[in-house]
Image (cartoon, rainbow, N blue to C red; front, side):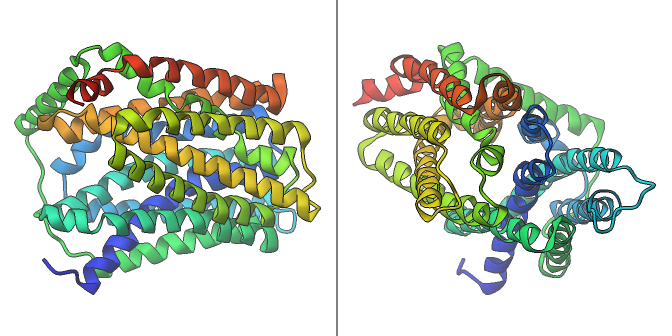
Length: 426
C-alpha cells in the first residue's frame, strides 16, 4: 500500500506520544528532583518508576479484549494530560517560590508530585501498549509495518530530544511551572490531534470469561515455552547482566551531571538532550549494521568491550571533575558524555538482536515481551539503589562498581545458548 500523508502523520505523532510521557517520567522528573535538592538516595529511587514498563505485559491482553485500541489510546492521553496538569497546579501552589501558598508546605507538595508521577508511569506504560496495538491492527500488511519502522524510531527519538532539551531549557529560563505546563499542553495537543486523525479500525468488544481463559492459556504457554529453552538459566542471567554495568552508571547520570559536575540546566539541555541523543542513535545504527554484516558471533566481543570501556571514561570524569564554567571543561564533559551514549548504543544493539533470537516462531510477541521485561530489570531494580551507593562510596565508587558488575555478562558470552547455535551453523 502506498505511503500517504495522513498515515505518515499519525505514525509519527503516535510514536512521539509514546516516547514523550516515558521521558517525562524517567528523565524530566529526575532533573526536577535534582534541581530541588533531593538527596541522592531518593534520586536513585526514580528508577523504580520504570516498574510499570517492566510489568506491562501482564495486563497487555486486556487491551485486546476490551474496547478498541483507539479508545484506549485517547482515554490514556487525556488522563496523562490531566495528570501533568495536576503537577502544574501542585508546583504553582506548593513548590515554586514565586507562587507557593503558605497553606501548602513544599514537602507535602513534592510528595504529591511524586505520587502523581507514579500514576503517570502506569498510565504511560499502558499507553505504549495501546499505541503499538493500534499500529498493528491498522497497518495489517507486514510490508507497511516494516516500511514505517524508521518513522517510529525517529519520532520516538524526537520526543527524547524535546524533553531533554526544550522542556529542560524552559525550566532553566522560565521556571519549572512553565516547563510542566509545556508538558501538559503538549500532551493535550497530541490528544486532540489523535482524536481528529485516528480512524476507528476495530469494532468495540467486551470478551467473555471463556475468551479471557483462552488468552490466559496462550499467555501461560508463552511463559512455559520461553523458560523451557535449553540452558535457560545462563540465558536469563546474561540478559540481565549484559548491560548491568551500563545501567548502574546511567542510574545517577542526571544528578552526576547537574550536581557533581555542576552543569547548568541550559548546558544539560544540549549536552544530554542533543549530543547524547545523537550519540545513542549513532551507536545503535552502527552496532546493528556491524552485526548484520559480520554476524553476532564475530561482532559481540568488540561491541561489548567498547560498551564497557566507556565506564572508565566516566570514572576519569568523576575523578577529575572538569569545570563546566570553562569552554574546555564543558567541551570535555560533552565529548565524554556523547561517547558514553554512543558506546551504550553499540551494546544495546547487541542485546536487542540477541533477545530476538530467544523468541520462538510461534510465540514471537509473547517471548519478546517476557525477554524485554527481564532485560530491563537491571535498570529498574539495581539502578534504583544507585543513589544509596553514591551516598556511601561517591560517584567514582559507583562507576567502579558498575565496571565490576559488567564483568559477569562478558564472562557468560562463550556459554550463552543462542550464540553457540550460530557458531555451530558457521
